[in-house]
Amino acid sequence: MAVDDPVLPDLLRDGLDGEPALSLKRSDRSMTDCRPLSLFSVQTGQQLEQEMGIDLDLRRFRANIYLDLDSSPGFTEDEFVGRELGIGSKAVVSILERDPRCKMICLDLDTAAQNPEVLKKVGRGHDGKCGVYGAVLVEGTVRQGDPIRLLN
Image (cartoon, rainbow, N blue to C red; front, side, top):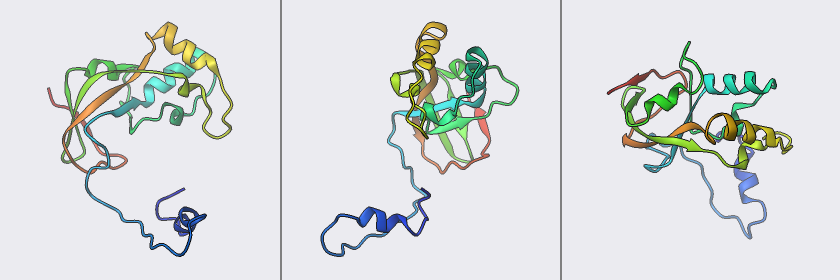
């Protein structure tokens, strides 16, 4: 549900006694603590789809930021470990480590159906890791389509 959906405040109030005041505010400040910030490339998702022969909804990887690395191969984000990325006009993220995966990636977000083959593929083919974790060094607003730059 979108944060600006007019139904959201009513749903959040449901079950509360009385009429508590409730409002939603947009902030231009960081909405993520310094860690973990999860980044996952579209290309990594495409590679896993090819390896498994099925469609995978990228949301199952629950990343904070999905990277489109153009013509790069899957798992290119692994090469960013130990380096810094500039995202948008201001944000800087230090890439700390590859993201070790748990069984949550087996769940389809729309149906809750489980496919344990997803975790098995990541475990056997990619050391149980896909995507990367980062720490925010310089806070900034990140928007869809913002440029991504390797800084060092």
